Image (tube, rainbow, N blue to C red; front, side):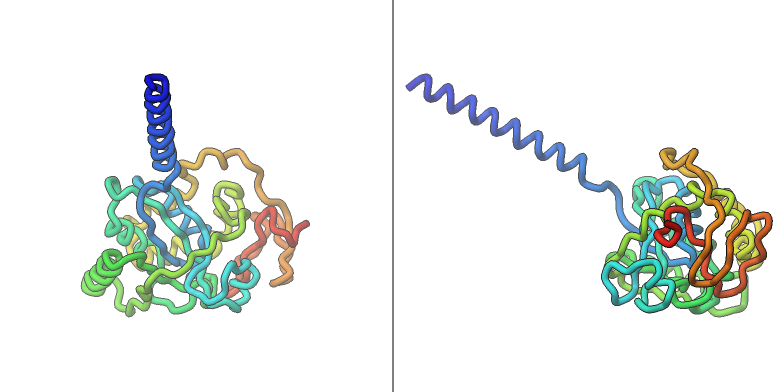
Length: 264
């Protein structure tokens, strides 16, 4: 009898230890922080801008706002899905608030254009705030109302605020593009006129932090090779070394990143 009770106690202790260990492991695996989702034109640039914000834990480039599940880059850029290029931002609310992220967002975009951001034209490059809950919805609306009164330009703000829907991660070759291909990324951003237009809208001092494009905490991507010449089947342009390329025309599809299936 005593042996049976002793065995029962041992089993109970073991079961409790297993349960406690499982709970701890689950807590460690569970994603930390909260999510914000913004569309601001080229997701390469939006990702680069928010990666520098203290309190941002991670960023993911992807597609949202449309009707097609698990879309490809070709489908989205071909305007067949209704999706916009967007970035999902995981942040620590103890270090940076959603309201602070909104302030960064506004000054990283041109909110006066519809279905366009800088040299990229079409609905996939529209701006939008995708609120993940009621709190974010209220905060975004309040931020917009305040900006309507304080904006340093005359043009109307046309960036919509919407409820967040499914978010689909973009292909791996789009993630951390500005780190994997720093020369090509900097050339694209410069030739697209993004920073010049932001300075024109918001003032050079307010947009200066966004020009430090290559600061990032995802150190694992450092040291990777840069993209070489490639050909885009959509625009028929041979992308040579950045120093030999011409300024992209409005609406032109960006150069295909290294690793794109079309380059195989």
